[in-house]
Image (tube, rainbow over all chains, first blue to last red; front, top):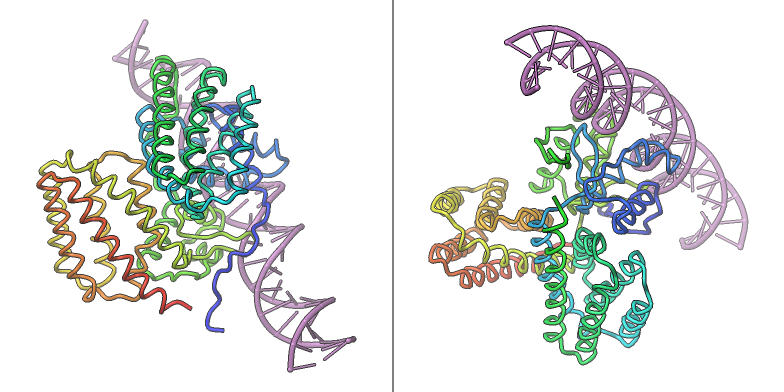
Length: 222
Length: 222
DNA sequence: TCGTATCAGATTGTATACATGTATACAATA
DNA sequence: TATTGTATACATGTATACAATCTGATACGA
């Protein structure tokens, strides 16, 4: 044997991961609000563990852009300004249309069915948390057939860092119908294997979302 | 004053940052090779600290994609296969041409001069480590005028995770002349404010780099 | 000979304890 | 009154100690 090489293997369910997932989810659901402080001790008690694995989790979330760490001051839920929101949306448009174009030729029948059923679920959803989760799943299912894991992770992170702002001020009733219509447009284009059209609809969808977030963010935030 | 919001403030030079920077640099210089294990205890002794801040540093580097962490097994310098290298290069092309197109209209005279002087430096460099550092600085200087911090960080991470493979097998003599010529092409197009041409040259530059890395990687790796 | 089980050594994961840095409240001063 | 200095409380940073897990080698049985 020439040398020992790192083998991916199975990853476990470690304490920091559990904590990170909890915090991530709470941030997505806006149970933890932008700018809010995350205290190590408090989280440690909540999970019945010490602060060390909590610190690990916070570091992880910092890497995902959900949390900002300031030395000796603590961890805060990231609170991007309008500028940064715009920047992230532009990155999303770039990366998501790219991934979708790669995905379109690869879609299998099962994958189309998954997308369809997620859309059906989305119709009968009222509360924000479920909407967010299923909306996220739909988009993930759209891009998954591109089979590029690093790209997909990147997109996931970018979506995670801005998506919660839809749900901070807007109600599903206000943006739901538009979203659903656009989602169906995108999926239909994919089913016709028209990658360019699908990408175009996706870009329009994202730009409209950005516009909504911007309008609220400009008035709502101080 | 209405409310105190988490303000970035000055960040310090904490122990984890120092350690992370050291490891990052060592990986860039290929002093730490892909697949190599990074032992907490060893690093802790080297810096005269305990394993806790070392763990923080490793988590940070995981977020940057330079290190893979496997629970209860340790940290390893990331070792992307040819597939992942290709994926990252495609992402780089997407993001770097995007950033460059945004940067072109914003270039100031000073920024052009910085790029020029970096190119001049690059001509008179022989060893790999210096080449790598200045090459990195040149590209960073090209994109910096786009003023989108999150985009720039992303590009930096992507570059960092694949750049070292140029220097693993190739010598500056073999790729230096091509690179320099392409760099000058790109810069000249920027000076003419021709964003599309500059982006085109950049893409060609990256695709040639990818091809070189691929050819070596396919034969060189086991 | 090959595969499997077992155990010692080593390494990582986590809890506890202490050190250090920061924020708030209050007193002193201009 | 506003500003600066100081004390106290509190949160974070890190070292040490111990527990859990993995690695690798050896012993055993088929």
